[in-house]
Image (cartoon, rainbow, N blue to C red):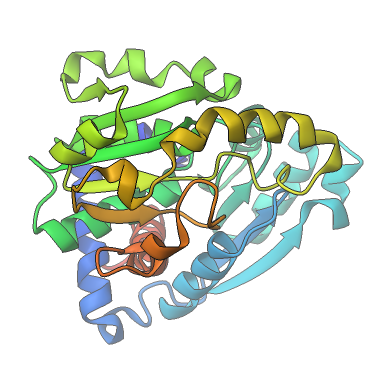
Amino acid sequence: MPRHVLKLSDLAPDELREILQLARRIKENPAQYESAAHRRGLLLLFEKTSTRTALSYQSAIARLGGYSVVLEWHKTNYAITSVEYETQYVSRNCDVIMARVKSNRTLKTMADNSQVPVINGCDDQHHPSQALADFLTIAEVNGKLEGSTLCYVGVHNNVANSLIEGCAALGVRLLLVTPMANEQAVAAGVEARVADSGLIEHRDSLAEAAAEADFVYTDTWVDMEFFSDPAFEEEKRRRVELMQPFQLNRENLGGAQPWIMHDMPIHAGYEISADLVDSERSIIYQQAENRMWAQAALLLHLLGGKS
């Protein structure tokens, strides 16, 4: 049976550490790995739009000597037939599938019907591809994972779920400042499953959490597919009103100077102030670049390539 990564906890803690260590080795010496996935094929399937997921996965497999094929959901027969039928076919044409879809249910159906590993490139409950890059960045900047403290401020969403799973597995303390939540993300029940770790805590004040944190991480308040949708305007307004007091800005940091993280795309003036994006404490672009290196390591791990 193929090995799928639909959520970060599909990887054991030791596997996570091995993948992150491999990512650092690939980043430090990319030439050593330029044929590690020679002629292996990666299918990238997008139901949701993307910049980082599309570019980083294509770049990752190319740097390993493989190739990628990009399919947009609405331009394929996925849009007009059953997911299981299409997946049984497409999985015969590649070595790995990375799918960025709207529903976790869709992703599970793909995994159940695929002959090759399926990687979650983002759905409504999890974003393991992003979290791998996040933890790689924390390890680079802080020199360690275990014992680091991360504060996540924003909507409890798919990114928050993957951070919760990763922090519990890797010994990172996570402070959650999440005044609202996406129903689908909460339905995944991630926090309850890792409660025994003792590493996940809630805070009401961003300033108090930032004073304890090495890193403060934020994300969009409105999912990218709805940000400019007129039909979502009322909900967008409600979220902005609720979340504005929790914007990541210097005043709300209360004098703390943590490293600043954001998974992008950035909506400056909403979840983060523009001056923090390019500030001396921002590691946002390092974090974004690390999508490529972390995903190269994940691909190599699933393909059984050079370690």
